[in-house]
Image 1 (cartoon, rainbow, N blue to C red):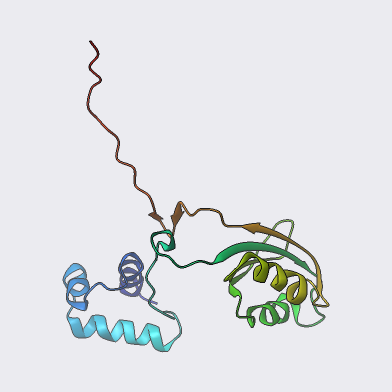
Image 2 (cartoon, rainbow, N blue to C red; image 1 turned 90 degrees about the vertical axis):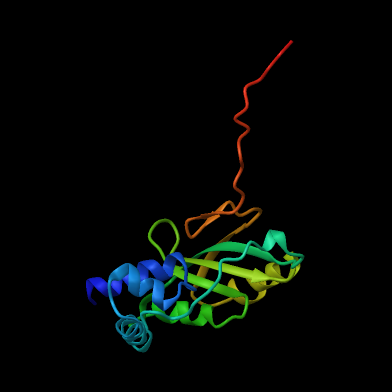
Length: 163
């Protein structure tokens, strides 16, 4: 990858809807050059998807999210990859990460209700042969994600006047 590719990725990460014309101007390139770089990164699986970051608290959509820590026994000759593949096939699973520390996989899961998410953990996830334990932490409130602060508080900078 070239330095230009990294610069384009940085700009798209900040705003995936940034017009090609703006990117070209910022990088002193033609729109054709920018489009070519982006097409190449899409073809090589570097750019996978363009997504908005949504503050669901400002909508009426009801759902439950949880981070689930999972300890597993890796399968011989397959390591953690086969286990991760088994897990990410479930509709409830939004993300799966191999992590270091006291557990092996970190899952972000989502379901319409607490009961449905609990059933996912108890009836689908924890019963997998190589899963040795799970610990679930429910998302109660989102403050910051992907560098974006959800609730910006303006401070009152007026001086207090007392009688």
